[in-house]
Amino acid sequence: MILRGVVAVGAVLLGVSAVVAQQDIAKQQDDLMRATIGKPFYAVMMKMSRGQIPFDQAAVETALNDLEKAVQTIPATFQTNPKMDLPGAEYIASPKVWENKADFDSKTPAVIKQITDLKGKIKDVDSLKVAWKEIDSKCDGCHDTYRIHLKKK
Image (cartoon, rainbow, N blue to C red; front, side):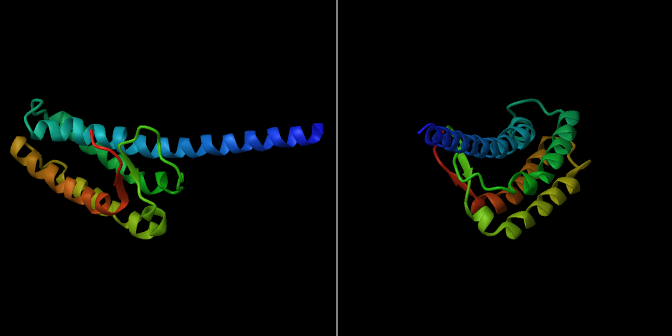
């Protein structure tokens, strides 16, 4: 009888550990897309291109460098399917990511190339607007297929 209880508790703990591990993976993926990529791209580049914050050449160059580094980590960060949503997330990765991982991974180099090609070319708000649209269109090449919008803000 005691052995059954120990086995049952062990099974529950194992299940809880698996759920926590899956949540950690989902959180890493969400953090990469929202914070690590989102901050330089949206909080800096988009806001500057819209005149919401003043143009700052150094901030643009830092944002491009940060963005380039972060985008390079996408294939590895999305290596594992967490098979669960992150509570409160606005977007999640579609199961298509893992159904067609090679295609998903093939999108990253185009984004990186676009970022690299723009380095040193953004000199004012007008050139930033063009650059932002160019990078955004490369991101949409993946988002349109591999991202699911859960809720509207």
